[in-house]
Length: 211
Image (cartoon, rainbow, N blue to C red; front, top):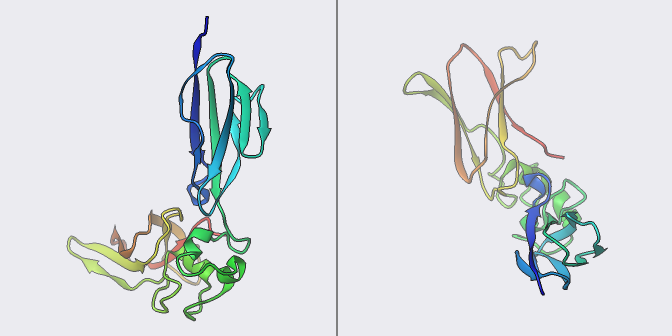
């Protein structure tokens, strides 16, 4: 008698959101006949790489992107993918490919728009490396209705995988330290942070988790 047992195949993105890649599997989750041999292939997406298998990998044979085994019970497997990135600054090839398909490493360290910020810095800042007017800076600050204080700045060509922009403040530039005030996930266009007024403060924007 043939008994059908479930083999659950799942795909996970690698590590933190900044490292996420894309990919597919040659087999889908479902029921497979007990005793049947199966070879599953992990297929990286464009500008992504396969990093490995995890889960129920006992009694399997792994050959890079392929994992083979005989169905002998329920099994859960995860294929992990990450984005192809430069050595300099860990800039994703996919982001650079918006403007070039040439030398990735050189592209990361270049300053295409000559605004004083390398393409690597533009990536982590969520700004446009082809627009010299696009770089991370506070462009507006002032009181708004309700007694709140508002800061504003702009982003362009934001990769959704970059970390939040942190807002820090301090009351004295000669003594003391910068303190965490808040953070925002960057989005294309005007970004704004509002806080209640609490005397005189200095503010700055900070890129987090960048190389």
